[in-house]
Image (tube, rainbow, N blue to C red; front, side, top):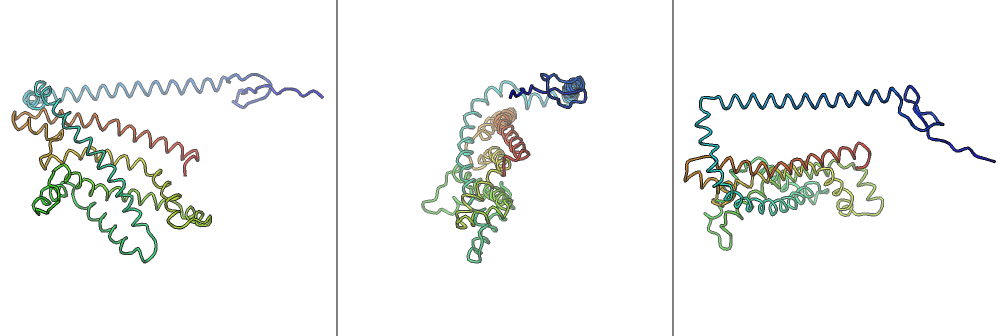
Length: 302
């Protein structure tokens, strides 16, 4: 018996696929796609035009302000910018090292605090209370005050064997504050995992600790990647606050030139350097968030 081969189908006039002929887009579908492309081009053109108009208006408002010549001389002097840039970049290396070390410390300490707050059983009640008190205190304490207390207060105690290096003390203050925020991010992720996941792990013979380690925590971390990256972006900017203790980072390098010249262009240079460093991290965070949203919409992520 001969079996006829089924040929590729075709969309009819209403876009419904029929069997028997090679695929050819229907006139209605072709028209719909052309309309979508036209709308996309029109939206892009309108967005570009509105951006140019807004930029032109802002430029005219700024340059026609009565104090613009003096502001330009004080904040946008090209000579001071060229002098400040190498020194600011040299100080930025300290900020990057602080970001790496403090970021790793914050993630570890934040996870420990989050796990401590989610432990079950009355025996862990003191640990839960201490973890909650830590997060409440350091989330409520302004970072600048924490830095002043640690950087200026610890050396005043004159403790034997305790460092007085402003870089180490400033990094400690950053770690104390940001670990409280990250702990709440991790805790929210742990509590967002459905209890059935833990119950299923226990039914397979895993202990509470194994269920937390192999089932709950991996899902919690994966869900909380975008807010964690946002906290790291904020940490990257706040590393400049260690300059209050005398550490020569990018901000302090700019401050030294400003104190000598009374021209604030180095601050603008330092700010732009931080912005240039932050933008890639922000865009990476947006990409990770969009990717996880797509996977969640497709059922690819728990």
